Length: 119
Image 1: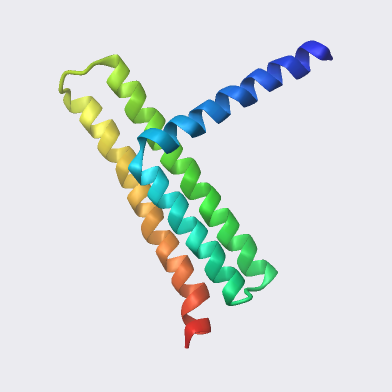
Image 2 (image 1 turned 90 degrees about the horizontal axis):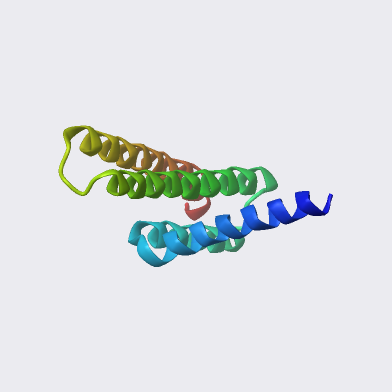
C-alpha cells in the first residue's frame, strides 16, 4: 500500500510540473485560464443555476485539458525534430484547430448562458 501511495504521489507531482510548465511557457494557456476566471466571476455575479455551473465547469475543464494536450503534442513534435516537416506541421495545426473549435464552442455556451441574463 505504501508503494502504491508513493507512485501516485510521484505521478501527481509530475502532473503538477506539467501544469506549471504550461502556465509558465504557454501564453494561450494563461489566456484560457484568465478568461475562465472571468467566466466564474460572471457566473457568481449573475447568480447562475447549479445546472449552468455544471456546464461552465465542464466547459472550462475540457478547454484546459485540450490546451494542455495541444501543448504536449507541440513539445513532443519539437523533441522529435526541430527541422520543418509537413507531417509535424499537420499534427500541430490539427491540434491547434481542435483548440480553436473548442474555444468557439465555449463562446457559444457562454453566450447561451449569459446573454439572456444581461438582457
